[in-house]
Image (cartoon, rainbow, N blue to C red):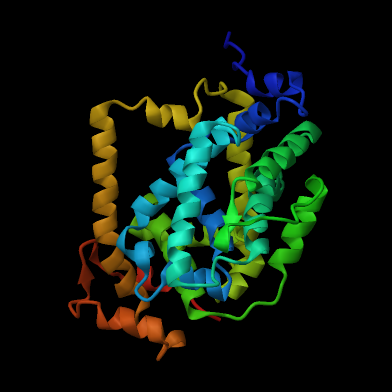
Length: 353
């Protein structure tokens, strides 16, 4: 007779007081059960929403693509590493404060080069509001139960404390954080539906995020499927602003349900993990860490030429300066360090409307 799966996370959450244990509740809700694939999926479907403004895309893409093209996988590792520290240790831990302080200093550095781009208070509040509600919204989109009431309370309080650590341009404290979890949801809806110009840089950044994910996790023959999955899980407003086609109706209908079924099955029949994703990374041997870094370096080397070859001939952006710059910097051989670009890969790229 099979043993029942060892379940402890939900049981512990239900035993905690969200008023005093909100850091622990958030940690249990967000830091366990991740893997490379789900972490990468979360990164793309989350961070694409933070670059949809003209000024935000300028700060990320700059003139030549920045780390989006030169160190895309290293950038993901760096960003995720900071997030995992915040989620696990919480806003009052010195490791979190040190990490956020480094982010504030980085923003201050770039604000001197791009004055005004880091001054929009609502952009920062949206990052906190979206992050606090993202797992709840994601689960609902997959047909799974959302957060418990105490998880909602804990998420709201946790990210309210996190916003106190960040500053906008010129060391300006943030303001306007919503009063409760429903307020966070309303703030996100309002922010996401604000009219925005369709900027070429936004298309390039979001397209690069999408290509980066399928480049790593899908064989060439299934790149189209990776793109459809990402589009099916993306906010329609983000796709529209980024000038990326929506998912096919069948993909929008079926892929979230399929992913929801897989996660539901794991939650029902698999043991809860004993270690968080951050702890599992920290427990890698020195050799495994070296191997992981080497893999990121190789992916970084391969992706820039690969991405340029795919997107620089997009007729819908013919004559646009950033696409033209990519075209000028792309070898004329038709191949990249990742190999020849097939017709299937070309047609799987997110296109502009």
